[in-house]
Amino acid sequence: MIECYGIIPLQGTQTTTPQVFLIQRTEGFWEFPKGHKEEGESHFAAAERELLEETGFTLSRLLSDEPLFHEYHFTRDNVTFDKRVTFFLAEVKGKIQLQPEEVKDGGWFSFEEARQRLTFESSRLLLDEVAQRV
Image (cartoon, rainbow, N blue to C red):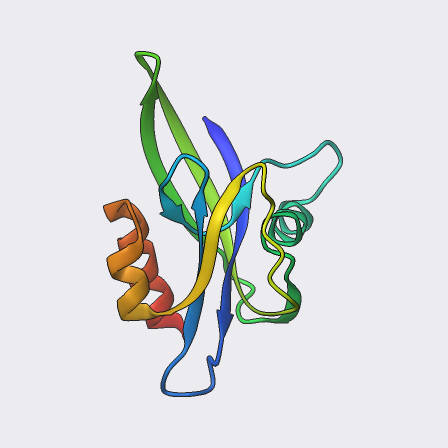
């Protein structure tokens, strides 16, 4: 199983209109920032590093000690892979600085807009879980 780690970037969680930041990968699909752990990194440190690398954001406030898990499979070159992503929920701060090698676009969206923009149904279900926690 492939394991990845990420932070679901949020803002305005203490308002009636919270927003989530999504990225569009260079391949074209929209998702939450995530990536692989480097040697010696904790799950959380990997998630923080990937957030910074892909978006330019840093953590302002961790919203829960309990991560969300996103499991799915995909096929590449006729080989099926199982993937598990551990996501942490956090309010973030900083200026948007997208990583051009991996990220084509990104932006802040209401949960409704994000739901429409997310490419995969499994990501929309994950967003529903996020909405229940904030």
